[in-house]
Image (cartoon, rainbow, N blue to C red):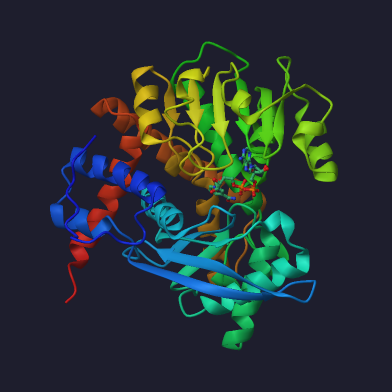
Length: 427
Ligand code: NAD
């Protein structure tokens, strides 16, 4: 535990439990690396935060208001970049914490972006397509002066997808009077999206899982894997690891999961979920809860749903050798300390799930150049960048005898700190 004195006399609205957890990781890292005090203070809070009220006409004719957020943590290296989440837990602190993680992630990957995040507090599964469209469009209109291809570029996150990005792009374009595809990434390929973007986060997670198994010498030809969350990230990770010869022994979604020690038939599960929806109703395995999924005996555990899933109260029940963080912030700092003490390797979110923002960067570049790459080119460049980042983090961790999270943060923060130092303080 580090004691970093907040130089602000008053506390700010962002300082929720979630935000303080992300800030604490930064404080620990800044202290360990001897970051300049002034730079440390400047990076502890987001640069800009916007809260908006979104009035929406519901299908039954009533009016409902929702709260939306967009937070930019830092923009020293380029436009801010980060996903938009629709979820009932969304609040200013969560969005600000996720924006800070995006800053370190982009810097670690060497991308010319700062970190941002956005979200709307809602229960997306209870909204019709029409309500979701009106909610997304009005949110976009409310944050329109905040975003733009040179300012801040949203992307999908939990419960948002290509269609959400198409609505944002269309609303933005209509309001500025011309088509601006580069205002978002993760949009459909037919609107200037990149081939490979939809799979990119899961591809990066699967890549990191394979590298970690090699690096930490797991004595097995068929690593066993359990995955929490079967949305964009979890399902693609499961598919690619299954194709790579891993045995996927457990998978879950919000309603529970399935366990099969002989290996789940992932192609059949993917087909089932795309038609029927729920993992827990699939026939190929024993039904389990999300808590049971986390304690499944396996080589690699991949949390790919919400944050704070592995915490001080359940960490001792884990039964894996490596955790690869597909989700953002799935392991709390207390759990991280326990895992380190018990020699369970954690490949941190800012490395493991960086494939999405990396291909978002490719999409932004292709859009600005009006020149599009093949899927093979996208995947090859992604693997090159993920490979370079993995090597840097693994080597740095080994050389300095620090855990992978601290190594990844150290590298990302150092790059950003150098840029901020050179730019100086205005005025
Ligand atoms: P998604 O909306 O496509 O899927 C979310 C999945 O999590 C669904 O299967 C849902 O049923 C499940 N889920 C929700 N609540 C759960 C709970 N309480 N217990 C277990 N499962 C639950 O979202 P996604 O895009 O796959 O994002 C998942 C995570 O990955 C998030 O933390 C997100 O921030 C992170 N992430 C996503 C991307 C991306 O490109 N989509 C990039 C980086 C990080």
